[in-house]
Image (cartoon, rainbow, N blue to C red):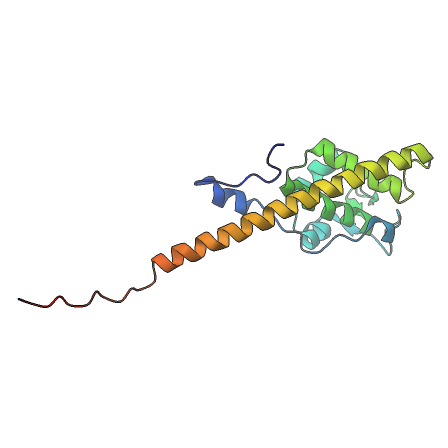
Amino acid sequence: MPDPCPAPSGDGAAEQLSGLQLPRERALPASALTQAGGAGTMKIGEVSERVGLSLRSMRHYEHEGLITPAGRTPGGFRLYSEFDVQRLLLIMQMKPLGYTLEQMREVLTDLDTMAGRGSNDPASRAAARDRLEELSRDVDVRYAVAERRLAIAGMFRDHLQAEFEPHPPPPPQPSR
């Protein structure tokens, strides 16, 4: 089985860490949302600021079909609902875990199906549930690997710090 959580190494480790962008808030469960998305809509800049994602990334996810703006202003500006914000937060959680755009699209489709926004066919719902359960197991493995790596990194860091703590000078040697 390939390593589900490859370790950063060498000089690239700092780059990988800087690429891990934490969403500014947690995504709500899909069952808590409606397609309408609650009260009002937000412009792209407001959503970008809220979730901590660049305008370019948001447009890219729209182009790839991962999000669809709730509408547009008469001037053509994109408008996003709370539903769209929550989808972006989920995307931001999947991206650093290495999921491809296609995998993200499949997950979002399955979540829509389970929340009643997709196919109501019992076979489709069962297949979506099975895929999401498999995904949940995969995330559990990734989490366990990350926890283990974190523990090992902590031990190694402690060792390195102990090596650089000031050591008392050696006792003087008796003179002859």
